[in-house]
Image (cartoon, rainbow, N blue to C red; front, side, top):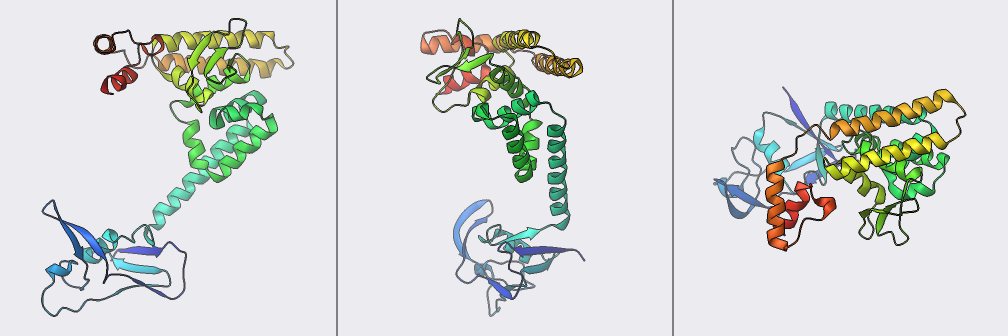
Length: 315
């Protein structure tokens, strides 16, 4: 016989704990319609736990957790359903799945190993850029040791979250954005209202709303499949190449590996931009609708952003 194991979330493992039933009211759904709040009544052997369904002198049985646990046969559908519809479920107690818990712990340990291995095999530029991609512009003021420490501590506390971030579809573009900031190719203006080129032109790349993360916003723009993002990607790539060429080379092998990594990253982003064909006809129609509604053309930086135009049209 197979069993479900319910466990108190308080961690209590001694003594008994009674599940409140008498005064509990649950919003009942019957025949796909809400019929209002109804009382619960647990009588083993019956086919319902709703008090209104149990007529006669049937005596209810209380449900007790012993030493922090309640073991219920999976075949006992009424008691299992009652336990899982009760408002205390996943608040005071939970369904314990030993195999699922083991898988979750193993996934966390593997993610931690993956992240620690990434950090251990990264040079200083990659550690700093990774920290900036994960933590944002606050990492701009950190030195290499602080970046590595923060990444290791985050990996220790949130291995799956960090692993998911490093493997996300937008990570590569965030990483390239972080490189652009970290190498001084781009920066925010004094008012932090825009990202600009860090040269004599100080040309505006992207506007920022108050509190927005510059690295993340530039990364989002680079991840979009538009003409604007492809041109920006190319400009950033060329800028990083020039910076790399102007840095005195100390170790050829290390610099070569770094150049290859940046080239591979740019190639991945460029290929990603070609994965899905642009919906030219639909885009043209949306651009026309926008112009008809707002009596002006779509802003240049959102000209090919279908999602942005649709959101504006729905406002």
